[in-house]
Structure formats: C-alpha cells, structure tokens
Length: 248
Image (tube, rainbow, N blue to C red; front, side, top):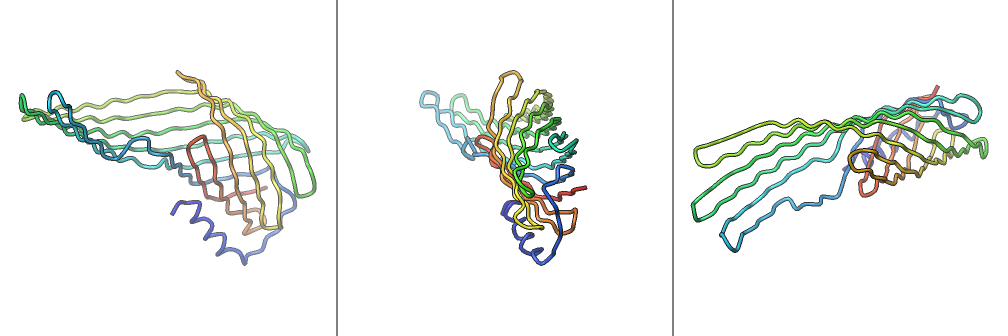
C-alpha cells in the first residue's frame, strides 16, 4: 500500500469534520512525505555462463523506492502574482551481490556493492494568477533551482583467502529550470482539487528534459489546516505524497 492509498483512508476517516475556506489561497505552507516508484530496468537475479571459458556469473540486486520529504512555501504578492520556494530531500539505496566461478584455473570470487544516494532540490519561482471565478483559478509559473546529489558506494571483493574493500564518494550538481500551469477549484468549503502540467530542464553533464503531471487534493479539517494528497508522473516515474497543508 503506497502513501497515496493510505492517505485516502485518512480522508475518509476525517469526512465528518467541517471547515470553512473562502477561495484557493496562495499564502500557504505544505509539508509532505514523498515516495517515488520507478520501473525496474534490471531483473533481480541474472545468471550468465561464458560458452568459451565456462565462467559462471550470478548477480543478485535489491533496490528500494525513493523516499523522502518536501517543504513548499507560497506567498501572494497582489491579486495576480505570487512567488514560491520549495525544498525536497530524497533517499535511495541499492545492494548488489555477484559470485563468479570458473573451472580452469579454478577461481571463486565474490563482489558486494552497497550504494546509498541522497538528493536535495532547492527551487525558487514566481507565477501569474487568472481568477476564473470565486472558487476557481488558473496560474502559470516559472522557476529556477539547484539539485545536489551525494552517493556513497561501498565495495568488497573476496577471492580465496584475500579480501579487499573500499569506499567511493560522488557529488554532482545540476541546475533545473521549470515551467508549469495549474488549475485549482474548490468543490466545497472543505475540499480543494488541483491538477498541473509542466516540465523541467536539467542542465548537468548530459542535459535532459522531463515532463511533469500532478493531481492532488487538499481536505480542510480546520479553517487553515488541510490534509494534502498528491500523485504525479515524472516521465516514467510515479510519485505520491501525503502531508499537511497550512494556509494563512
């Protein structure tokens, strides 16, 4: 069960609580736990035999989903403009164990690799608001940000009576330019719906552009406090988030 499906249960349990909200507010602070699920491009177990040498290699790989948290702040400057700042911290881990054996000369070797990755995203931007009605808005935004990636790799190689281990630390940085359009609507005094579409351009060693689509709900359990639920698609990755949304 993902954090997105768990949050729907929370919404159902809090359905009897009433709150009041005037219009979609751009003065807000959101704190959420996040989870990203990406398609596994490699099988968990790989077995290979070299037909020429008879060498056998079996590899077992286990990897986690990407888990983390995010903080989003937004402030309206006037009737039609606002600015925002976002921070996101994600964590990922992977272990890989390989065993190699060959008949001539007889060799049995083992390789263990553990990788832990942490990324930090800092984003600043601004947007323009179109008020379609008292309860409906559309806004367009642009942003600029920075991503910092830190990876720690632990390797251990054993063959016969010998063993070697070492650690590698890698740090990379990327500049991110983003753009998007968002539709927001209040169905009731307690329930706000939004959906957005946009993209991100990553400027690193190899530039890349990804598409971003999200859909979310804010359910107000008090006048200025809501349960926030969001689901998003980042190219081939699926991202879910649940947390608390404050307005002021």
